[in-house]
Length: 194
Ligand SMILES: [Zn+2]
Image 1 (cartoon, rainbow, N blue to C red):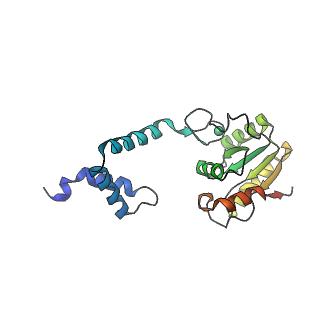
Image 2 (image 1 turned 180 degrees about the vertical axis):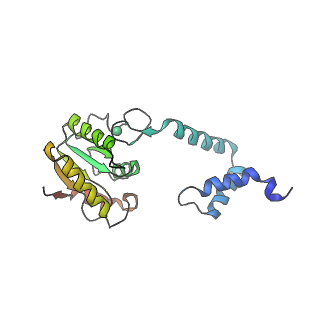
Image 3 (image 1 turned 180 degrees about the horizontal axis):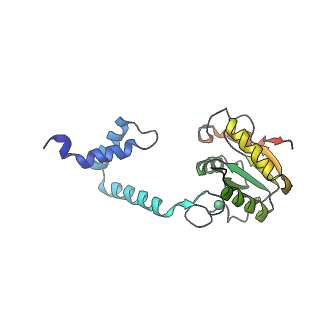
C-alpha cells in the first residue's frame, strides 16, 4: 500500500474542500489537516451543520430567499414596507442587501425568466399591492434586457420601475460591493421612465 492509498479518505476530504468557492489546493489541505487533527467535537459539529443546512434550508415558496420554512422571515414580517419589491438575481444578494440595512421592502429572486417564475412574481406584486419594482441586478446587457422585458410584461399593473444607481460597477456582483456604495445605490435609485 502506498501512502496515498492509505490516506484515501483524507484525500477525498481535500477534494471536497477544494471544490468550494475561494478554496485553493493549499487551503483545502490546511482545512483537511485541521479537521483530522483538531477538536473532534468541532469537526462533528461542522459535519452536522452542513447536513442540517442541506436538509432544512430551501428557497422561500414566495420570494426565493433562503429559508428554513415554507415562507421566509422577510415574507412573513408584517413590519416591512409592502410598497416596494426588489428584484435580485440570487438569494445571496438578499443577504447582502439586508446586511447593508438600506432597504425595508420585500424581495423576489429572479434567476430565470420562465413563465412559472414570472407568474409567481405577478402573484406577489398583486398580493401585496406593490407600487414600485426596484431592480438590483448586476449592470450588464443581460440585466438591461431583463428590465425591459419585465417592464413590458407588467406594464398594466401601475408600477413605478427603478434600478439601483450606477454606483455598482459594471459586471460586479452585489456581494463584492462595499456597504456604503450599496446603501447609496439603493437610496439614490434611478427611476426608469416608461
Ligand atoms: Zn420569502
